[in-house]
Length: 155
Image 1 (tube, rainbow, N blue to C red):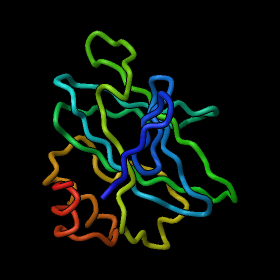
Image 2: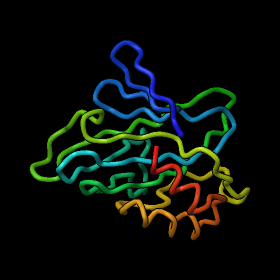
Image 3: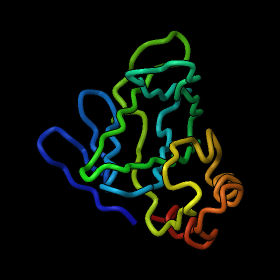
């Protein structure tokens, strides 16, 4: 379901680059894409995205327990690729971690995002076992089947 490439010291998993201890999600021009995150460590981690102008925003911080998954919807209305940079940290005590060592991530291929969600960015599902991801996909009416999810999880 995804290609794994090693370029220099960066690990790239289908539209995801790991660099400088962060996960850099690469959003294609003029597209809305679904990305997955999987905690491969034995510790609870905090995944965060720092915004340049937070205003009244509650932020992007999210907890991800060992073995659990999250889905993130990201939109790009620009004519060029955009980066969405995530950082990783221990929950207790709070300490920055190298994302490459604690999460795997990639683009969930084959999704059909409704037009009503085309310019939004939010967590579709947070901190779920793989079997729990379909609830978020169904809630937001994203075109993706449980058979596709099963196929994805086998890769």
